[in-house]
Image 1 (cartoon, helix red, strand yellow):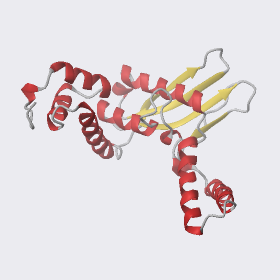
Image 2 (image 1 turned 120 degrees about the vertical axis):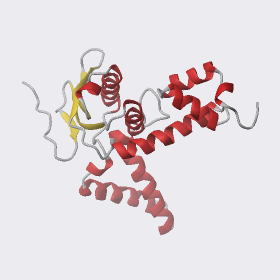
Image 3 (image 1 turned 30 degrees about the vertical axis):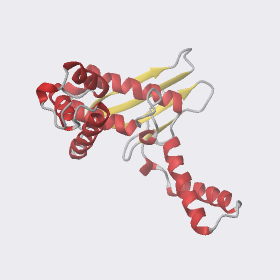
Image 4 (image 1 turned 120 degrees about the horizontal axis):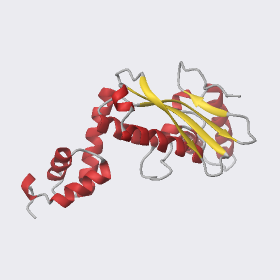
Length: 221
């Protein structure tokens, strides 16, 4: 293999594999493989970076359409509703968007996040968690500088465990829910965001999380 392949030298089966793994278009996959000299893992990273850049631009656009996805766990003991927003009704009706909403609802049923994004964690909760982590670290006799690093590390873990966008997807832990949204934005060409969700479990008080300036989903009688 030469140090710089041309598009004609990229095997079709390699382009197909990359498309299946990333959901990107044929031309984008071929271009990424050329740039990566045929290395599929590097091509995936190239596509992710381009997708993140494109998503950052689209994230400024208003997403006022979408749908409410749902998931009922086997046995009917746990149920989830999640509002997933996009820019147009056309995208909201696509199979890819509907599958995304279902997968996110299923993930919520399994991992039970408390917030949509880290920005929604209240200052009171953050202070409480920091105090607990600091006390635990100080009890080990570590120096102050080390204690602060430990606390910061535990706070990141707190976000990862409790904030939906920070959680690793239950069916593929190599990506977070936030990264799944970024990939969907790149694939569908519109701004996409999770607005709110509610998770019900038989025998428990209903819970859920809502984004800023949203109204909680009402509990139906």
